[in-house]
Amino acid sequence: MFILQNNTAVFILGKKLGYLFSFFLFTTILFFVLSYIHKIPVSWTYFHVMFITGAIAIFGELLERYFHG
Picture 1 (cartoon, rainbow, N blue to C red):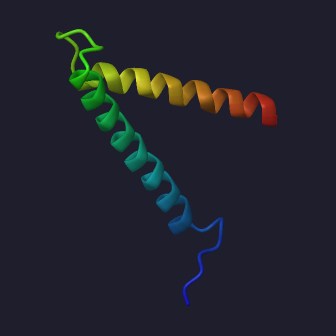
Picture 2: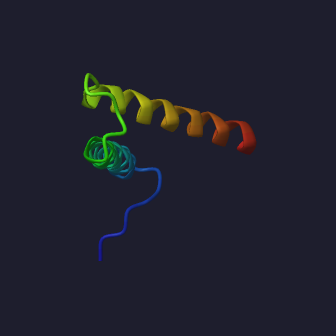
């Protein structure tokens, strides 16, 4: 059985790639849902939703660092 250690380069790379994949998956689903129910302006593109999702992710990261010191 192959077990990854928490501080190896493969583990860290997998963690970052997983986060990136999840970010794009969530952004894509959010974009299609908001487009379908007509809750975003017609002129907005995928990148506008990506910016909002990124801002929320950065804000969450900052909150986590603030509260966990």
